[in-house]
Image 1 (cartoon, rainbow, N blue to C red):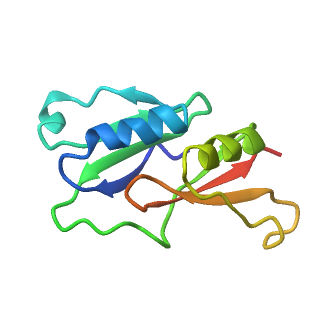
Image 2 (image 1 turned 90 degrees about the vertical axis):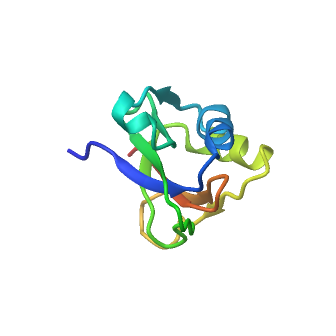
Length: 118
């Protein structure tokens, strides 16, 4: 079982991360251990067992190809919420037979995929 996936973020972007991961995706922020909190960034978890760590990278560039794929039972409602918040929901249902999924990007351009729970 995968414990977490780490994505990079620019320094000082914690408020934007919270707006996207908590406000749009509905995840919960997890407190970072004090030794790691001084480095910046945020950790988030959802009720479905996914955990994402956003860590500060000095020479930040968004991950546009590499990405986490998170399973969600509420795929349509989530896509609507993401689009309403001004982010893309790019459906790719025809690429893998029998798999409903879409991609979006976070507040810094990191690619994230959401896959329907079968």
